[in-house]
Length: 346
Picture (cartoon, helix red, strand yellow):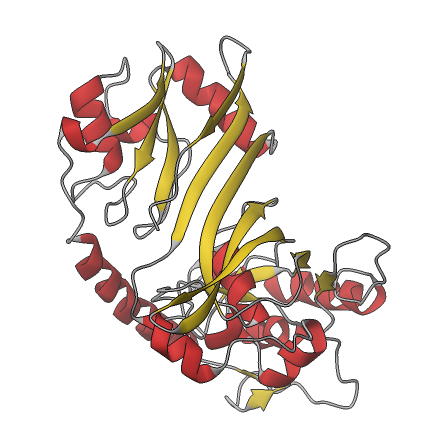
């Protein structure tokens, strides 16, 4: 069944526009995934040899890499800060929802370690019987900014609908490596789970989809075998700066599709990883450059201003610079429009 689904996908990709370059008439440059199949290339998913830049791995190899990385992530989770009531900066609160400004260095939710959700539950209360039931979305461990939590079951259901139907506007501010050439633009590249660097994400290419043909859902996590997800990021340059003598660009980011790690992967693929990104930045835990080879970067995202390896290396160990700056949504219970914004801490 898995084989049939992927074959259908690959046939569709070869004849559809999902992976084919398009010419946009918009004022912003739009970058599409354009990695097409090499019709002369053979697909050898059992040998472990590279196939169009992708390597095939056995299920045992994939699971071994996954468990090793999960162990490292658990070690980091254990460092999550415990928040006092004074540490929690409330930006909006009523009887139904509470919006707080999450600091970096704390988990959004966890059953085993201190988390933002548990702190909010303990200090501000909820009609729900557990902290995790308040969660409607999350920010990464190193990401600061606005987080919405539901205080009632009705509010949680309503906010889940808001997020599922994408009737929410989320804006992030970040510092990225190098000086961006374009003042604004759109990055349109599909994302997939990275079987070579699980459990992280990467830009999806046909070669890597072909390599998945050797894996079965009964042997590896089914998330690894999910089809590519269309992903769209809009960016706007706010200014060009320096951090310890290294060039950086301050950008406003709109995660239009809201995929896991979307901003991190798209910016890394563009050659401007987020400053201090220990996962997708230079020398990080995930595949470099969003999983793209240098040739794929040149084909998909031609960019003369791409940050050099030396600049990326110099900024890799800095504090992570990405912040969920603003939110706009229709209140799930009162139906009033809510618009919130907080200052960026860097």
